[in-house]
Length: 183
Image (tube, rainbow, N blue to C red; front, side):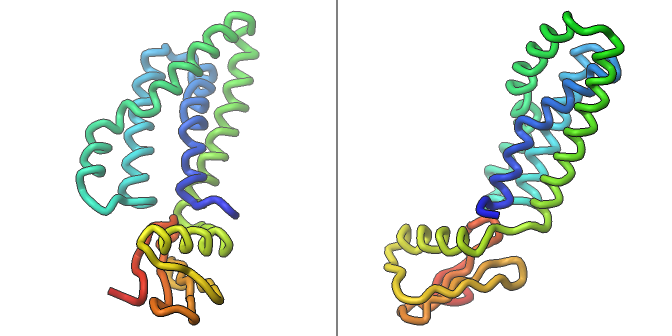
């Protein structure tokens, strides 16, 4: 897969609010209850991102998401809920419940696959080499010669045997661990 796991995780920005709208149709709860559920899902979404999937290098970003994580999915939910409210006027209650069941089940399945990929997946070898080149150029190194990518212990190590720095190690989402060796 050419995308990093965290880039695929961004799909949930749309899937989660959409799934909550389908859940609202399935259960016939009020939109206010669905909004509260969306806020709670938003908090879990962003704190899982910060805690496990792609933690920041400092605690400040983590603290920001801990406090503001409740609101990030609400704009998408607002757009979807408006569309669902308009569409709901043209459908019978039975059709809304059926569409809600199918849509909610589909969104849950997609979400489970995306989260599983983020916990155990990794970017492709070619993407790792591309990310390594970008990081090296960012720090003023000139990558040249052979490039050998090795995935080990949840990290990509890109070896440059024809250079002075020798190697670069990337985290599974493309973040830099080191250039030139451990430490």
